[in-house]
Image 1 (cartoon, rainbow, N blue to C red):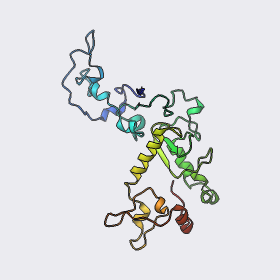
Image 2: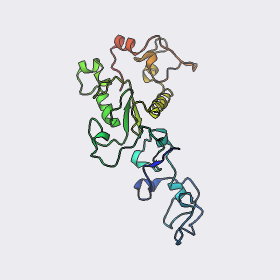
Image 3: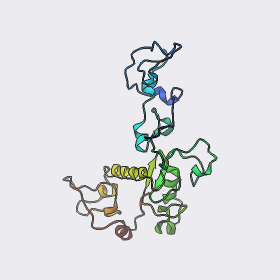
Image 4: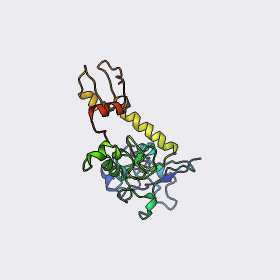
Length: 243
């Protein structure tokens, strides 16, 4: 049986709820919420619990499906509850509220991440923006970039070709991390590659070749497959890898 750990509960005081859409039709004011026995329906009640309320308890208790899937872009500003349905013994976890526990802080800025940047083959904790900055070429020496140092974990130097945004910290070996990575790669595969798109139809080009996670598609909708991968085309074109 799964353990349900509620990360965010009542959102009535959150300013982000001012513009939250009403997703269920209120049926008026609940006749029981002010009585001694209270409202037996609780979070399932579809009546308003107060004359000034815009959202019913049913609306307020809705769970964010994006967070449950691994990543919510809204983060703390999300209108819905962030619930982690991790199974017992799973290494997926939300850091505790104590920001002084070094174990759960970003390895670069030592702050509590709002959105994590997961690296393949590595269990170090990073803020998404911190690890993206590390992987960028700005402010780095050409030797460092050409050697591929920025495409490794700054702590253990494990090579990682991409960063996966996640609302939860998922350690290496956790099945949910592998699932999150595959979902991220699948989402990238639906986006057309900017390098391929800019190239001429007679001479298609992408510095990542067949290793690219983005879509390479011919005019007729069929996939275009390169003969080589990133190692070949990077060396041939001297193009710096993307972060």
